[in-house]
Each structure stands twice: as structure tokens, then as C-alpha cells.
Length: 247
Image 1 (cartoon, rainbow, N blue to C red):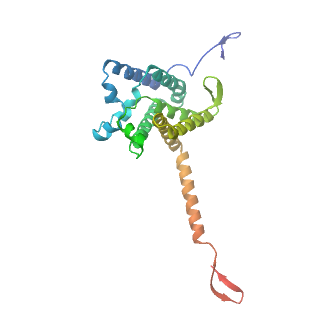
Image 2: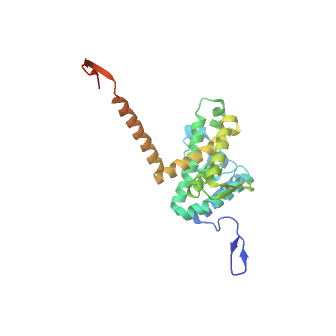
Image 3: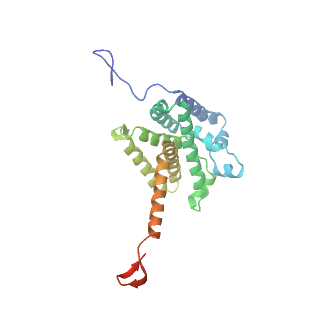
């Protein structure tokens, strides 16, 4: 609810009109959903199948899988999240950086799927030949970016409970992590979402200098601790009139 002219009130929902990159991504994603309805073979060709990426070098799949969706509700929820969180981010960053970030998070989620498919566990064999589709990995990247840019802004969990953005992302990240280690089949998708979240955080933190500062600080602490051990004082040498020598 926003004030309008004197004596009147106007109502609005969401962040406002679509921005250029968000609009383009929605159009491409809707087209990606509709095309396989006409040509079903496109789901295999444009979705993410680790076996095809590794053995046939279908290297476009870690990008194109983001524009494919397995169901209408999957598409609607992802596009709703893209609009709700992406519009403010694009206004803040500009179209070019926002589009780059979106693809970094989405491709990061795809790389997580590829890595998981090579692990020596039972679920990896099924994942290696399964089809992964959807923009959820990129959306999770937008969520963590939104929490970093607007940590105190409330997000309504289940459309009922207002929670600060930074807490909301911690909750969904924890749910994805716990689900990935506790479920056998659905856990793979959750781990892929977590990969998008982590890719988005690492990229944004690196750009803002936070990641570099943290790693540099940890490296300096390790060096200081190592030097301190080298120069510790201990007894040694010959005993003199005043007691043992130390060095």
C-alpha cells in the first residue's frame, strides 16, 4: 500500500514493472517450456544429461537446461521468483551485470550436478544418465544475492511469515543441504539448488572483495602461527652461572 494523491491510497504488489533482462529471461524460458511440447526430443537435447556432456561433448547443456521446465507449476514458480527478486537486483546492478550473475549461478548449479554424477555413490549412477531441467539453480543464486544486497528486507515464508532476507536464505539453504544428504532421489535436485546458491555467493562475494579479504586474512593468520612456532622460546645450550640458557 502506497500513498497517492492527497486523501487517496494506491495498492501495489511485487517490485514493479519488468526490467529488460528479467523480461528477456522470462520470454526465453517460456519459449523453452513450449518448444518441447511440439518437439519432445528437445528435452533430451537441451536439458542437462551428464553422460551426454561428458561422452558426446554437448557442452551447451549447462546453459540451455535453465530454459527447460518439466511442468507448468515449476515454470510459474521460478518465473514468479525471477520477477520478485530479479527486478530489484537488475535495477541495482544494471542489466549487463545482472544477466552475467544469473548465468553464473545457473551454470554453477549445472557444474554441481556434473560433479555429483561422478561421485562413487549409488545415486550418482542414476544422475549420470538422468535429465535435469529448470532455472531453480539460478533462482537460488538470486535469492542469496538479494539477501546480501537487502539483508533486512522481509520475505514472506509460505506467504504468511515475514522473515528478514538473510534469515530466509539461511533457512532454504539449510533445507537444501539437509535434504541433499538425507534423501536418495530428491536429494540430487536439492544439492543442485545448493550449488546455484553457493555459486552466486562466491561470485558476488568475490566481486565485492569479501571473499578475497577473508581468504587473505586466513592465509596471514596461518603464516603468523607458523612463524610463531618457529620462534618459540625453549631451554637449551650450556648452563651458566645464572641458570640455563634459552633461545
